[in-house]
Length: 97
Image (cartoon, rainbow, N blue to C red; front, side):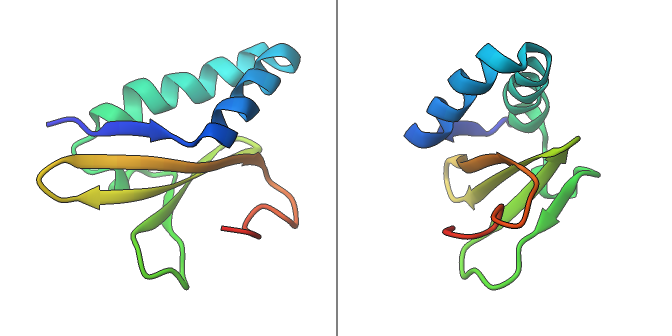
């Protein structure tokens, strides 16, 4: 059973912006979201996944080169992954979650 992917509005803006500047990286991120992450039976066990500490909900980080995809996984009756943030890795990556 596959997961539903919900993308926050600010993440959508980020993806549109990066698509103009770095088309190849944008394609990699979209391929990962819509093919690998969505169709994974357990997205937590992907080799590039790491559970984020200090959060009460199931927040994970998936690493794609220099970019980090941060999302929340809900395993209720509906399997949902909510993408909270996509950003290039730097000191402010995990602030404001």
